[in-house]
Image (cartoon, rainbow, N blue to C red):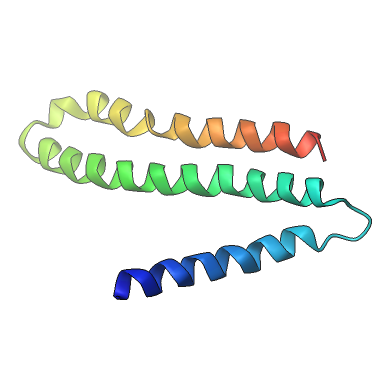
Length: 99
């Protein structure tokens, strides 16, 4: 039952956000949906990067405690998920150019 309520709450939040995106003056419904898509491109990729860096950061801290010479390798592992947010930003930039 709790999962159903959480799902309904998520749908309600998305509906409120969609109404803000569609309530632009002098714009069509398509441009509002493009704006929502641009926001979702950045938001979802940011959530994914946060989840990935949480796991990589905790494992990297443990590794650095045992082997301090592995700093460069762990730094590269932390930078790799950041490309995901860059891709999300590029997609949002291209979508914003279509409005």
